[in-house]
Image 1 (cartoon, rainbow, N blue to C red):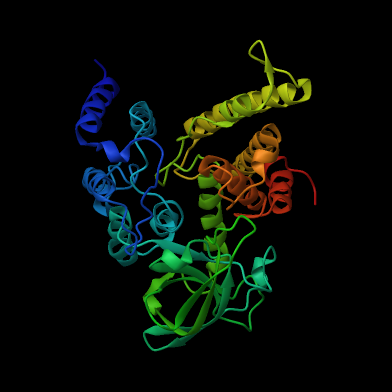
Image 2: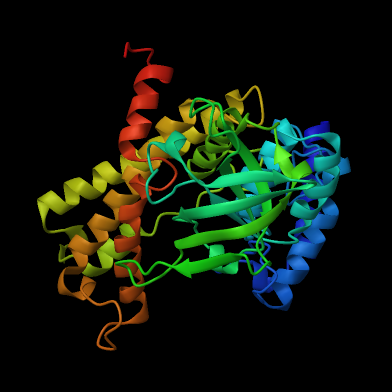
Length: 394
């Protein structure tokens, strides 16, 4: 038996013995938010996986990981999928800022932050976009002024997803306004428990409020929590965006989710609601759309697996933009297919005349419109693909 087969056998046995029933199947997953109570089984699942180092399987052991190589990581993902186990810990801690600290942080920063992130001790928000600086991120105006051992932050960030439930936020701030706009930016970590940080939810068309506005009024951040050096935030911030996009694309093996795809529910929903004849969808246009969707879905999953196997580091490069964009467009097409098949049953979001399942599909369809904006707009991703992947001229 090869070493990898032994690892698979041991992993399968451990997961069977240690994954609680309440941590299997679809449902909530831990973001590390201290204020959210996910119940006994999910807490136990997080604790056990953190002790094993499998919340961040590829990280060094000294920072809470298990130092799995790519082959072992793939085996772990396959065995988690086999028992339909949920990801024990997800979010911007393990997927965005953690890998960024691992790459750019000082030894002290790694020792202070990474084990905490790996344990799920605190959820993280992302402070990038501003009301006057969205796609033109380098035009941000949120200021951080050095005052002894701290920086004092003033300004506001928008679209700070889940900030109302988060404990920390990593923020791009302007530390040297006299420098060219790309050169005077820093990435800094901020504790959100202080009263100088205010969070205001933004109600969306879907009715949910995962997006927020976060306001800093003389908020304090430790001076030694600047990641990657003062005024080097543009370089560090762009690298973090690669981790973000690769997470959206399902290929970020430096976090916790790479390669984990749920089985698409689109075919089942379409077949449930669309008129059929002898088991075949009667509408040829809808039938053709579903077939094309299934082909694209299979191609997307194969591409994800190929990119993960080809990775030379724990975070992909510019190709993540292509996979992130294709995945977002595929998700939107799947939502459109379900809504088309459901007809008038897709029109309810709060009306009791519609079932909870129907309302959830409608809300997800509305929320899905944001996927070609969040994590970099469709236009930004197309520019990156054209210049950095295809090598086309400006």
